[in-house]
Length: 131
Image (cartoon, rainbow, N blue to C red; front, side, top):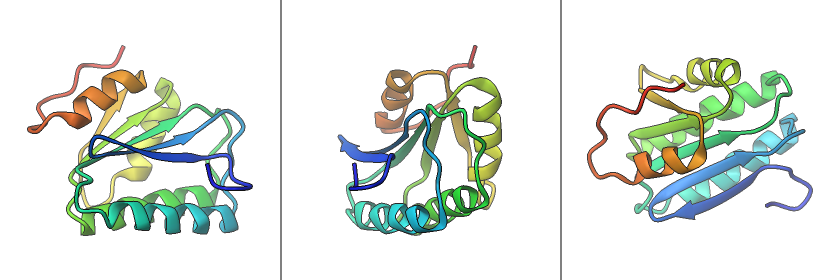
């Protein structure tokens, strides 16, 4: 986790995992910090997929929406084509629409472990239907 930020990033076998724990909000300054971190991580050509885990129930700010959309664009420019979002159903649907940049498919999941297994697969097939 970056100093002063509530979000965290990690790389797990070629998958960039970005987590927003309970209470996380994104201000313009923290959005820039996240975008800088995201850019540095996806610059590594071994990143094949991204999993965004949202545990917060706070509404997404304008800065948050903008940061997430820019982050997906950066990843697409680096060749990442598989994106998953993990959240409770109403938040997950909202995030799918927010992250949908240029008609990419965002796979929805209820839990991080399932999303990570999907993201690590070499050929992405249909995702399990969320409950």
